[in-house]
Every structure is written in structure tokens, then in C-alpha cells.
Amino acid sequence: MNSLTLLRAFCLSLPLACIGCKNQQHAAEPEEQKPQEVSLVAQPEEVKEDPGDLYYQAYLKSREGSSLSRDASNAKERELALQKFQESLDSFQAIKTKFPNWKSQMVDGRIELTIQQMAKLKQKE
Image (cartoon, rainbow, N blue to C red; front, side):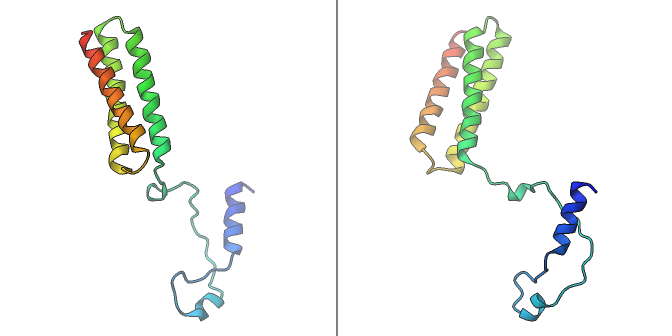
């Protein structure tokens, strides 16, 4: 017996109630139990964005851009560094838009720093 079968059996053993139903009799009546599909994967609408996680991912992109720009010896490597900086900038700006009250000074500082890094790299071209 696999874990999904066990989970389905457990779920089917739970009492069923009418969610949002004001008829208390429905909640007390056992409903005919039919096998139901059980999804173990979070649906997109259930996933909440965490600004801290988004910030960390943007920071990692910025750091990668910095590393690439230090080691860039040709136009292709500089372009890759600029791409990472742009991705980072887009992410920081998205955080600012979606979560305007979340550590705004820190986010603004990163936006400014990323723009400066991009300008500095473009001067090398």
C-alpha cells in the first residue's frame, strides 16, 4: 500500500461537513463517501509570495552580476553581467511595487546600487 493510498484512506475516514452551510443537520449526517482525488501539490493561487525570499533571489542575481562584471574580459561576458543586473533590478522594482511598505529603504538602496553597477559596467564598453 503506497503513501497516496494511505492518505486517501485517512482523508475518507474524516467526517464530512458542509462548508459554509447553515443547516446543522447536514454536518451531522454522514454523507456517502466516494473516493476523491487528493492533490498534494500547492496550487498557484495558494502560494503566497514572501518579499524576503524575493529580495534574497534578487540579491543573488545582483551578486552574480557583480562577480561576472569583475571577471568580464569581453563584450559577451559584460552583456551576461548586465543581463543579471537587469534581472536583479527588475526583481527589486517588483518588490517595491508589490510590497511598498516592506523595508523600503533597503530595497531602494539595492535599486540605486544596481543602477550604479550597471552604469559602471556600461562605461567599460
